[in-house]
Image (cartoon, rainbow, N blue to C red; front, side, top):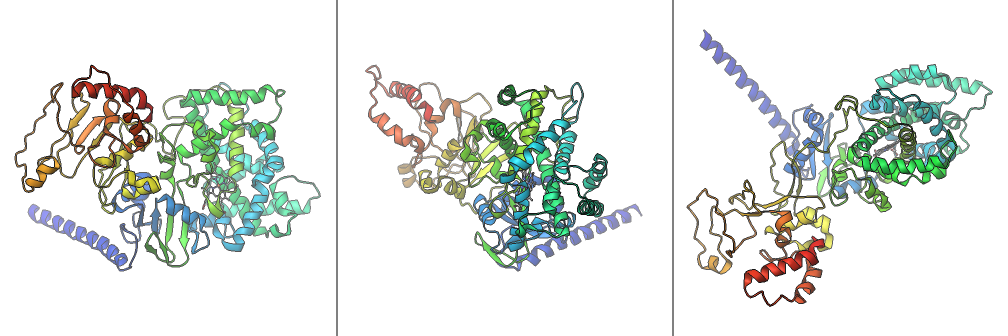
Length: 634
Ligand code: HEM
């Protein structure tokens, strides 16, 4: 009987597995019939890969990219989707709104924001709604209209925190909504806000919010009182282009509240966290703000000139937004079949313009996991073509300057009024959405793949890594890309150019033996399993000779012994021997491309002392000269 039961369970299990496999297969076949789609997998019918995407977020993205490249297809959030992690393509999509591309936000979001909201419209309607929005929150009006109010409400909000344990997440959250709410309807009683906030937090409370706003609008129309807030400006727009219907006004208000809520609150909270963890940055910020306060009477408001002098504050806000990546990307939808990067994206597909990774690009942001606000003091960075923190193109965030202003004023009153310390680890500061990338992984790997870029290296789960291939080398170095030769160990030279601290550099070739750095070693040379690592002429005369004897042994090259060294299957400690390993155009040459300009004249003019009467002494003397004179180049 028991045996029968086991057999039945096994049959059921096998049957179930077959069904699952068939469903997966069917889904893949369904999409494989369409020609020209990007690589990728669509997962389960209907569900697609939504669960993996929501559960693993950034690591799901990295894994798929490693498998399929920077542009791949998937099925998430109920829609076949192409994910682009390619900075060039992302830029193209952002800059080419309208050419077959419109916003692609899910229906659930449009249901909350309303059908007239800015993300639901495009073309002329978008221009009109955006124009109206900019007349309320754009850079031209925030100086006179928004700043005095933000100052007043933020200062009021930050009162009486002395000696208390506060949840900074909860507080910044409340502050972002309250300050926006008060700017929209300043003179409405605070009790109204108390009803409004829980409805807003539920997000499903649109119906109730619409009712409340309609009521306020009716009262305003019937009242002779002069109001001075955003709602008043919307109701009495002076510019005929921007006269909106009641429905449009309501959607506009909900959009302003919704768009500036999580973005401003999360950035404010993360700025507090980063400043707490980086006392030097906090000290410099305090200096900036106390210098402003010194010029003012107690309680005097911040004015535009004060705000404009907050250059380090702006840098802190940009660095926080970058490192915390509050917005991971934006969504677009195709309105016709489109060819992008050589792939055909069918009409109606969603494109996830995933911009998160570019925030950690070491070429754009050297040592990208470090909190370094000073990098933003170079103003060019804000306008860099690949800086997508506030989006780009015709949908560049219209609330960018308003958001920065709100966070600046918050930081001003927060750091000039309080000193604080974290209570408990991560108990007060909670990061349910924002990842803290700093310090989570002991090792960060930079992998430079040197063979065919269409072949994808599989990297096991659990590694924190960046993967570069030949296409990336071409993208990063542009016309200079030829200086890193292809299909040899010189590909590691890209590693040198990646501005990040690296301790070990490994060059691993095909199925060769792996370098071993378990013992304190400056250079470790792995041997090849399959062929003798002969020099070129010997290999020519012994083309078929193979090494069949593999000895699992470590040999130490004695001091003073010269030995031939191949650049492949080599590992070394960068700090000890890095400059000598900077490979050039041809393998095994001792000169890196970045040194060429200066290195050649340097060597041509080098004179060694007379005591250098053998190779070893010459080498050591030359190495000393290189260290002292060329050291800063490396
Ligand atoms: C630190 C704060 C903020 C960040 C990081 C941020 C980021 C962004 C990004 C990335 C986009 C592009 C969306 C897309 O292309 O689909 C965007 C658009 C938008 N943002 Fe912000 N934002 C911030 C603050 C604000 C504030 C305070 C407002 C309030 C008015 C706001 C209102 C909007 C609106 C209405 C859009 C849509 C624009 C359009 O479709 O034309 N944002 N924002």
